[in-house]
Length: 74
Image (cartoon, rainbow, N blue to C red; front, side, top):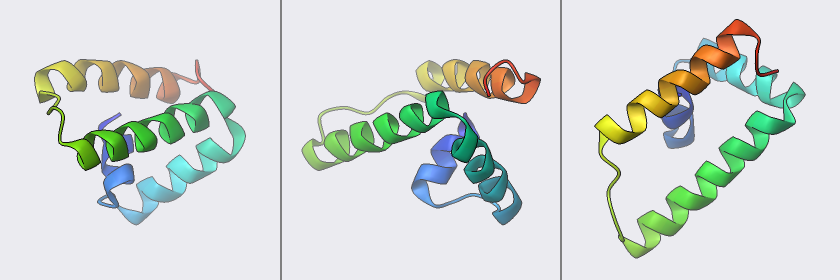
């Protein structure tokens, strides 16, 4: 999921970006996740309402990426 966070920030290696975009072109679940994350980040950034600590975000992101890598999420 760190890759998705970096992807949303435009700070990801080209090969990772291609892999994510390929996956997103076939996976509605992840597409919704990325779109929702993008919208949430925009709202939070625009309002400055809170910062999400890495200790909170990182474990969730790692679980999602592990599921994507394992093929559990397609």
